[in-house]
Structures are given as C-alpha cells and as structure tokens.
Image: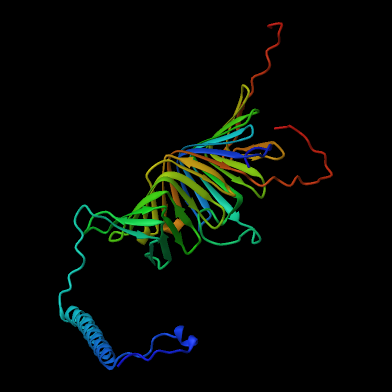
Length: 153
Length: 224
C-alpha cells in the first residue's frame, strides 16, 4: 500500500496486462496510482501478487483467479511519489508489502515545502511515515530554506 | 317356402335368423369378394412401400434437400462442441440457430452461451458462429464470467474459439474479488492467462485491511 491510510487503490494507465500464471499485472503508459492521500506516478509499474490463500482458492484457472494481495510494486521511468508532506522523484521505485517500505533509486530529488535534498537511495517506511535519504557512493546534498522572520531583517 | 309363423310370443323379439338359402349364398359370395379386394389392396400397398425403399437405396447420388438462397434453416436448442488448440473442450449452446446462407457455415444464434472447461462462461442475447473459422461473435449485452467470481460486461466480443482468445470490440467493465476494471478495448489471450486492456484503463484494487500490529512503543512520530 502506498499510503498509511490504506483503502482502495485507484490505478489509471494507458494499457494494462494481467498475467494470471505469473500473478502479475503490468501497467504501461502514464501510470497514476492513488491511495488515500498518497500518489505514485511512473512510466510503467509492475504489480506482483501473493498467491491466494488456499482456503479461498476454490478453483484454479479463469481470469484473475489466483491473485491474492499485492506483494510488490515495481515502478520504472520518471517515478514520482507524492504525499501531503513531501514529493520525491527518481528513476526507479519499488514497494515491498512485507516491510511496508518504498525504496526509490537513481537521481533522487526529495522536496519538502521549500527544502530540497538530493541523493541516490530514498527509503520511505509508509506505516511509520519515516523517510531516509542515502547518498549511495556519493554524498547527499540538501538545501534548507530558513523561515523568513515577519520583522523582515 | 314360407317362413313358419311362430305362435310363441317370445319369438317376436328374437331376430329373424332364417335366411333363405339363396340369400345366404349371396352373402357368402359378397364376403368372399370383399376379402379378396382387401387382400389385393394390402398387397399393392406393401409392394409400393417396398418398391420405394428399394428405389431410394439403389439411387446412388441422393442429392441433399435443395435450399434456395433466401430460405433459412432454423435449428432449435442447437449444441456445438469441440476442443481448442490447447485441447480444452468447449461447448456452445443457444435457444435457436439460423443458418444465414444456404452454402455458408455462418449461423445466427439466439441467446448463445459458450462454456469452457475452466468454468468460464460467455453469454449474449445474440451472436453469429462461423464453424469453418471457429469464430463466435457476440453482440449487445455480452457477459463473461469465470469460476472465481469475476464478471466482465461489454457490448461486443469476438471469440476465436479454436485459439482460446477473445477480442474486445467495445468498452469493457469488469468486477471481481480483486477489484474493478474498465477500459476502451481488451483482449483475452492464452485461454484467460493473459488479459490485455487498452485505452483509459481504470483499475481499482481493494487491498485486505492491514492488521495494525499491537506494539508497546507508542511511536507516533511524524519525524522525517
């Protein structure tokens, strides 16, 4: 889930391919995923589902029969992750349901109000709403805009 | 010889039995003629019947019933069954099937239903089946449902029955345990394993509610 609020996930795209046996759904072209107050945009997103719990699995085969819950989300190309508190941009992004964590890599730019930070690896723990920026082989760089005092000095 | 008068009153009620000898002989002759005529008629009827059977058996090229171009042949409760390219059996039933042209293999169907081995079912108020090419076209209110509770609605579908493939001719709406989907056109490939939706694809997934872990630490930091 890309939002700590949970709830239905709305996915829009130009093309979608559902692969039953691999339990995958490919979203291709202008992908826009929204859940609660969080939003994920990318060129392509791959959703990988867990196997349906044996009890529910009444019959194999059929369209969308074996899909359980979302296990992993992989986003590629112009990846944006936007919440009311922050905006993050990178080349790739992945979400792992087990750890409830979003990891973005490649030319990360993180914006929070007017503060900007750059790095290589951004980790967002969705449930705990904790974000960690890592410079990878290089260093992180950050620009923080101090608050303007009202007395104007 | 006069009939003997009976003075016995009971005899007045008894039927007249005594025929004169000539009358009796005449009656027997009439019966004999009738019996002869009946036997002759029976023999003639049997002869005609056997003759027809022998003639049609001998006739080599029994030509099929000639149906002119504008006439249609209607079958009630037709059933077409077969196997697709992966060996899965399928069955197409309908309320009625009307063969469109005398020579072609196109059949117009009323309330056609296609069912395959996995329990998937496609139905529509009207359709057309081409037995040669194995294509079933469905029109108006097409419904595709499968054994796992997924239902898709569209107003046009072309089912390549032999290939286990469905091509969407118009927008599709779908609903099921995983969520909902709508799109402009669609294609079902590999017997349902691969579903491709194209154009304005809107999907809604309903994830299971997350179990909120009961932890001692009352961590509610909003720190970034």
